[in-house]
Length: 176
Image (cartoon, rainbow, N blue to C red; front, side, top):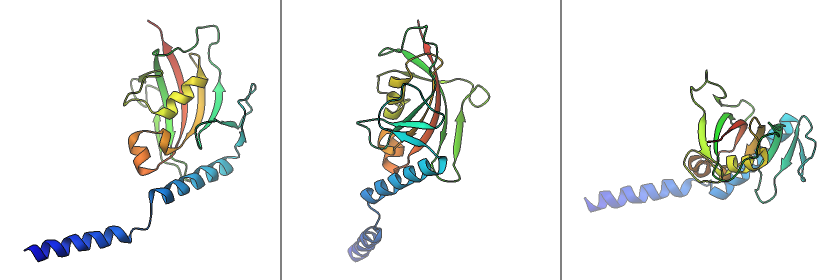
């Protein structure tokens, strides 16, 4: 019986050892996927935050590798800007970056009856770092943006599986 266990253990070890894909390799593939997406979409990448956003201009946000942000709509600048711990109603479209994207829509009440509610600058399971970074630059109710979010800034499952996503996002700040 001990020999059978030993043989099974050795067999599992050999199978695991045969997989040459490392986490480092997966991160390199992710980087290529993001670069190919940017090229396919004709995105112009800039390294300084624009004061005027062009149609397809994405800002490569410093301090966050492979995170790109595009402001589509400024929102209502006559209202108070987003502050720490404010609640935010978020609607979004999530898509993979492959040529034939897998898309999940949470854009309106037909897609999902209620928006995702999260707190700005508060870590929870309903938010990821990438969303929080985007909120920093959206600032106002009614703002809309597009982001390219690498797995390290995504949800835990995205990080462990090394899956980057694109998001179209729109927010409403909840004031009590």
